[in-house]
Length: 287
Image (tube, rainbow, N blue to C red; front, side):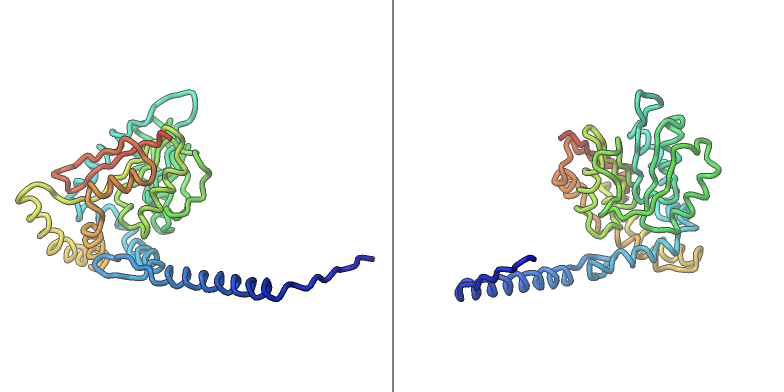
């Protein structure tokens, strides 16, 4: 038979324990309140941090089936040229002693993944990941007609909390998707985590035009032309208005390079495209 021994607590120790527990409870409440009060931008609006992802998802649910048309409108068709340059910069190998694995984040429609497969002559293995199920649906349907269909998978995932193991991928690519992530610094840390040592991060995003005259023309085109045309073509102007506003809110090139370095990456570079309408940012995991 087991006997339980009851040892009475010293009165002062009991009081100290109660105070300590109360302080812990207060700290937990404070942390929860702090998280609840965090805000971020959704276009030009300030919204609670936890609401942004749902708002962004709604935008891409609306445009998923006309995503290429949306990019054509926003870039004057140049996004196709930029994506070719992006993958050429990545230079995926065509052969090797082990698989070359790429995580293409926010790549739901598969246009970057298809280019990587073609550039590597089918050698690269590509995991296309997106938080939006409609974008993944479009991409997986398109992949059925690709020349190189093996070694491709489509995975629903959040860039801030990736379901992949540490050090799995040789490259992490994200094209025109980073500005839609609520916590960019968190996504960059996750990119660093899932890359192998020697792995490469590549981010392509709309940027800040740095050519005189062109900057004014592009601003006018973005603000007064793209949303109305998007409304006429797709029947909904709001997603295009958000996407234009999200470009303005994205960190400037120097600031974004610093964020990449803060996440642990080395040899960080910024390559402007078409007068810095868009830019390629690159960094390496060397530690």
